[in-house]
Each structure stands twice: as C-alpha cells, then as structure tokens.
Image 1 (tube, rainbow, N blue to C red):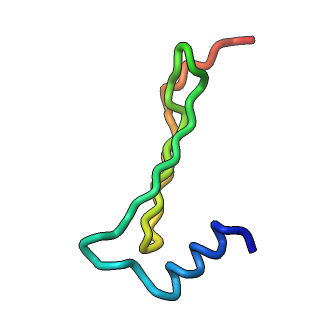
Image 2 (image 1 turned 90 degrees about the horizontal axis):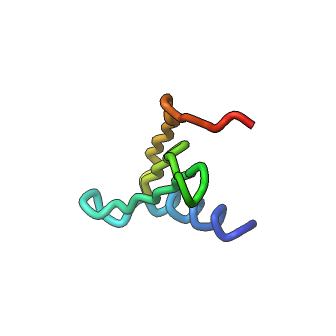
Length: 63
C-alpha cells in the first residue's frame, strides 16, 4: 500500500482527532502560471467528508 492509502485507512479506523479539530486537505488545479484561472478545487476532511467543484466560467484559449 502507498502512504496515502495507509493514512486514509488509519483515519477510518481511528476517526478524526477531535470533532473540533478535524483537518481538511485542499487540492486545486489551475490553467497555467501566467494568466491563471481556477479549473477545480477539492476539499477532503479527515473525517471522510469530501467536496469537489469545477469552474463553469473557464475561458480556455482556443488552440
């Protein structure tokens, strides 16, 4: 098992550290470094809750 799978399994077995101290992990995706636009965002809670959103107004250049 890789490290992420092991960490996720550990959290599921033990649950979050405290209901008031749940950690959240954020992942974002952007178009590029110069004229960046947000493509998507994902948030995963230590307690297993997840959110994923994508931009509806992405102005991707025509190539």
